Structure formats: C-alpha cells, structure tokens
Image 1 (cartoon, rainbow, N blue to C red):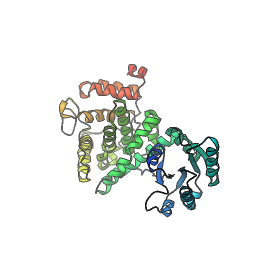
Image 2 (cartoon, one colour):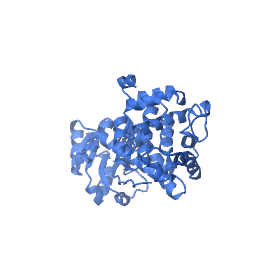
Image 3 (cartoon, rainbow, N blue to C red):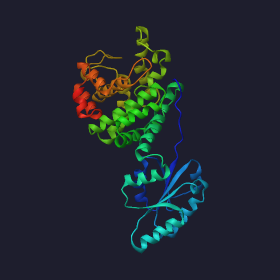
Image 4 (cartoon, rainbow, N blue to C red):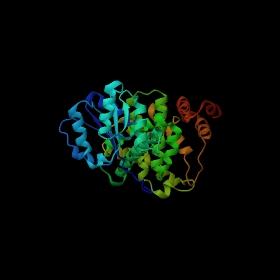
Length: 373
C-alpha cells in the first residue's frame, strides 16, 4: 500500500456536568473540534480512575458551584494527575451580581484558568476552549485537522481489511464521517483539499479528496443529514479495491498498457467483494464501490451499465471521483486547475449527468470560475 500513514493519538476534553440534559448539547458543541468525554456527580457507576488512561487536554465544568456534591465531585476528579495538569475552564450559570461573583470566586478556588458564561454560544465556547488548550491553532485549524485525522483512521481501517481480510471496522469508518462534514462546513472545501496532502499514500489522498467533495456537494444539494452521512461513508470506501492492485501499476509514471489497464479495472469488483466479505450491507456503499467507473453511454466498467442502470448517487460519486483524479498531482502528471478539470468534465458529454456536473461546480467553484469552465 505504499508508505504507511502516521496516526497520531488525539487527546480529549473532559466535560464535568451536573446537568445531564445540558451535557449532551455542550459536548456536541465542543465535539466539532475535539474528542469529548462526559462525567459528573450524577453519573452512575462513576470511576474517576479510568479517566487518566489517555491524554486529557482540558477540563470544562458545567456545574452549580453552590452545590456541594458537584464541587466535591469536581475536586475528586482533579486529584487525578492527568486532570491536575490540564487547564480547567468553567462555565458559570450566573455571572451577574453577588451570586455571579461568588460563582467566579468558587471556580477560581478550584483552579479555573478561565470562566465563561453558560450562555456563551456553542461556537464561541469551542473557540475559547481551543484557544486555551491549543493557543497555536485556530478553531478552524482544529476542526479541519480533526476531520482529517478521523477520516484518515477510517480509510486506514478499511485498507487494513484489504491487507489482512476479516470484517470491516464499521464504527471506526462511521466515526470518520461527521468530522468530514464539520471540516467542510467550518473550514471550507478548498482548505480540506489542500490539507489532504499531509497523507503520502495516493489511495488515502484520493479517498479523502472524494469524501470532501462528496460532503460539499451533498450539503450544497441539501441532502438530509442521514443521506449526507451515507454518501460520505460510501466515498471513504469507494476505492478500497486499489489496495490489491500492484504498486508498479498503481503508481506507474506513464500511460498504462492494455494488460496493465485490464488489471487496474479489476479494482472495482475487488473492492465490492471485499466489502461484502467484510460485512458491509449498505446498498449505496456496495453499488458505489462496484459501479463508480460506469458511464451513462455504456462505455464504463465493470458491467457497462447505461443510463437508468446507474443509480443517481453513484452517478454523482463518479463525477466527484473523476474531478478528484484530475486535480491530484502525481509523479506522472501535473494537477489540473479547477477550471481545467471542469472543462474536461463538461467535455465528456453524454458520459456524465450534466446537471450533476453543474451541482459539483456550484459546490466547488466561485460564480466567475463557473463561467470560465
């Protein structure tokens, strides 16, 4: 599979809350930029000792500081070495008047580095936490980097099955989907595409490029959230069959001959078979892996499907796949500019669904660039 991708272990934020109804919303707000674990005085079977296994990058409190049980639980948590060394940030439910002043003093007494109003908007809360835990990074940096790390782990889990066989780790794959959506929504597609080059394996790069394009066009077309997730998951898994193609063919610095091209074309069927054997049953994922090189005029492969024989989501993924291949730089070719790439897509005529090329163009290009293409 070429050079391995280096996986770095991400730390986590510990959210300590005594409001279970609020905890989920706060964790979701923070979760766009970092992993979050939740605990508190009212959690059953709580074992603070097991919180120190990984790296805690910060502790955020959402407790009533005038509630003795909550403060006692927080102090107990902070006795863990990993917790003591992490910055403590407190959300205060009252910030005005004498009660607000008392809350502030109680938070400072337990070591709070910063205090925020519990009414702080979620994005500002996440930005404040990132600024405290990672002052060298912006909130957008964290969101994009987290998306890249999580989706990279997902692709890695898929390719491990290519090498070793067995079941596909679907929870790890699914854990890489929402971070892609968040990265595109908050950081933008261009930033995602540029960041993907941190991976030095061409299959990783291509899968992550296609996943980002899939997220951008799905959001632009206002897919329901569940459909966005399925579409991106299919993108992450669409090309796993290339893991069985010899590197001398996959990375050949020049045009493939007929025999090599015949081998390359087997990757779609190989990928589909690996997914089936790996326990994947989602029809979109299976169809995408098998048919993402089919063309509407019947000239594609492996089954030479035509027109309505190709499902709409697969047609759209095919366009994302071709566009990603065009803008990628390889030792044997220069990257096309976005305008050049869309010029090629439009020149393919009846092979592709014109309205879907238009949809991708709206998601990728500025209005003036769409005119040029």
